[in-house]
Image 1 (cartoon, rainbow, N blue to C red):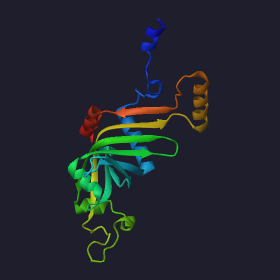
Image 2 (image 1 turned 90 degrees about the vertical axis):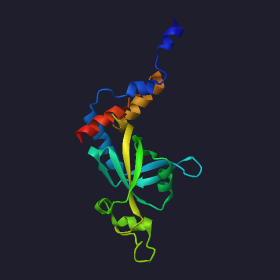
Image 3 (image 1 turned 180 degrees about the vertical axis):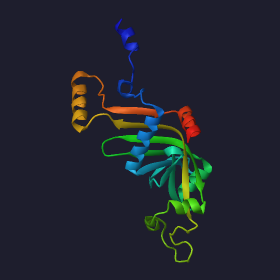
Image 4 (image 1 turned 135 degrees about the horizontal axis):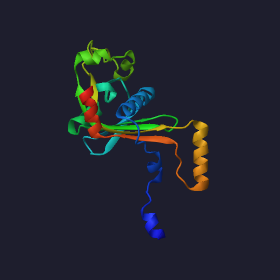
Length: 203
């Protein structure tokens, strides 16, 4: 009987206890957008065009489209990540804050060089990353032909935000250590590809 009882238990009790199945699609997207905007910086993972290995680099979120689910990042189109995306457009964007909350967006990426879009979201700080090549053209400005946009089109998303304050979090973890029961401290949420398609129809 003990073996039968154990076989019915979930092997990942933390996920089972923290998975939020009640939030509406509107609420899930709204909270994800708020979290990404507050984080601002994310790790962008692509497949290296030469080795096939997964590589990540820090990127600053420039803007969002389609009601927040599609993400825009400025890029130097002569950089390695644009070569990566030319070979494999699959991409992951991961956000993390100091409280351990996180978000992971899986999607496909395209490199856009439309000057109006680039200028719309241009920021002066980009000069520090592009540099001025002193040729009167590649100067780090909004007109620099090297400057483009990586547009990440979301396919799915997973994220975790806290459902308790710091003290409540610590108390719940302490109780879990004593009782062996999983700490219920986060809202684990998933946005499926079907939900993303549904969102696109409305935005």
